[in-house]
Amino acid sequence: MRHFVFALLIVLPSVDAVMPGHQARAEESDQLWLAPFSLTGWAETIQSLRTHSPNDVLTSRARLRLEMTADFNMLYAFVSGDAEKNWQIEDESGLDLQEAWLEHAADRWDLRIGRQIIIWGKADGVQITDIISPPDYSESITRDLDEIRMPVNAVKFRLLGDAITTEFIWIPVFEAAVQPTGDNPWAVSSERAENEQVAMAETIEPSTSLENSEVAVKVAAWLSGLDLAASLFYTWDDNPTYHRSTYSTDDVLHIDYSPKHHRLIVIGLECSRPWSDFVFRAEAAYYVGKYHETDSPTIDPLKKDLFKWLGGVDWTPGNNWSVTAQLTGDVIVNYDAALADEEMESMVTLNISKELFNQTLTVSGMLYFDLNEGESYFRPKADYAMTDALHLLFGADIFCGDEGNFGKYENNSQVWIKIKYSF
Image 1: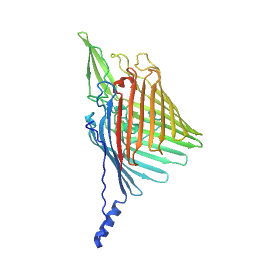
Image 2: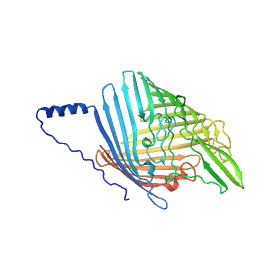
Image 3: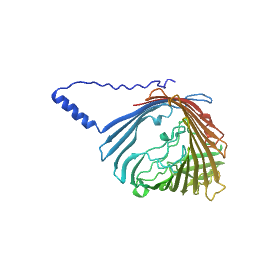
């Protein structure tokens, strides 16, 4: 617990003085110059304890986020940056530019240029069409989705109609997803036979060129009681495909991996409809050109299209209760028995929250349950607002299962405490 900071203190002194003559005019000039700018941010620290042996610290970090906006009427600017110290994942420590963009908004269109986070889709805690911003899984899925999404350098242009909005996105430079590696406690290595020897080459990423750009278009319509959207994303797979070549010497199987990112075309559909205390949602995406891992170390990954879908409902019964339930699945088209994944996989999610004590305490629980493997991930959380600015949070990340997407992290189940101060 030596790294845990219990209190975060921000002191903002102010001094009022009466200035004669030119001093008063100089102060007024400074205030006019600073009027378009505003500075906000937050500071937080989190500490966790593993619930399995050796019951050590699993998550330990402190982060400061500063956000500055500037409103010049015709032009709006936003910049945010992080300063982080991570005692468990040293690569996360340091300074990082989060977002930095300029935006111009007109009556019927707007344009945003720069480093930005782009959110698509209607799913809760699941990414179907929400793949414009690549994910950061440095701590698996234990972070909030807002922390998992990474910014991209992009140009976003929207045509704004009364009932229809058309969005165009150009991403000139590819950015890959982040996976836990090395000494990261969330890096889980797969077991290999004693007679296998592995060599890993550098990942081949798309070079910076116009032909390697990513482009997307989305058309959203707001009809009477029904929201619809269709999208097309010409992109690269955020995760590399592990191509390999093999040979044997003296009863030893040598496997040489050559990771490479491949082109994808993703066609998406979204819809939602409110009714009484409910909102019904659906989302689907068809991935053209997706590569899938095989069961055998000697068989290269196979290229098979993938269909992802989701159906969900939000229910607000009143009395500060909120319930979200979803059923989601993957279907591999033209399935091959050599693939490691099953032809059809499905998962249920359930998110229940309740606000108490005049909305100063929010308790919630998010459950992911894999219907194929019988594995689960459960995240209970309590958020207590000590003041409007200072929040104290308690929670847990509980993984159950064998060796699947959730079960492989069973030994990383943890309880945690977080303090967050906003200013």
